[in-house]
Length: 109
Length: 111
Image (cartoon, rainbow over all chains, first blue to last red; front, side, top):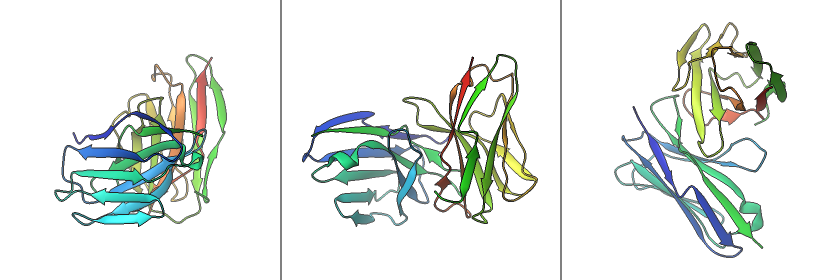
């Protein structure tokens, strides 16, 4: 069945450093979504990418969708302690979203 | 986020017991989902329902059961057949495959 893989599983950075997480699907995706889960909380929607090669920005966050619509990335510029949490990508046919394993980001002040 | 209510937030189950987790949404969403989250394994889909009175198995449905008798309700029963039920359970809803909104989750522990 369809698989969505995310790397790295963990990332520890110093505050102010950049951070990137990568998402790869075994099949072509109709769209990809990104979620953030703070420690002890529930996943919260960040963004959805639909078009091949699409790039979207939210302040210090940059999201990309690959040309083949099988991979995606999230890049955070100059991390802050408020960025701490686990970032998930999710994609799939219709309403059955398949989530990646997530990348847990810790930021040392 | 708001509009999806899960209860209870914490639940303890004895070996051999069935327990039911409640999920209610007032977002008028057609689709509802149950995910299980274990440390380091992300979110795994248990069951999903795209319409009232219909639901499909996800990737880890064994030992679980659901019903969708009303649009706003999608309860999950963790049966005694689920051998390792201790986990964080997340209910979610969406309007036709778009953004998924999650409830705050329920922690289930076997004692």
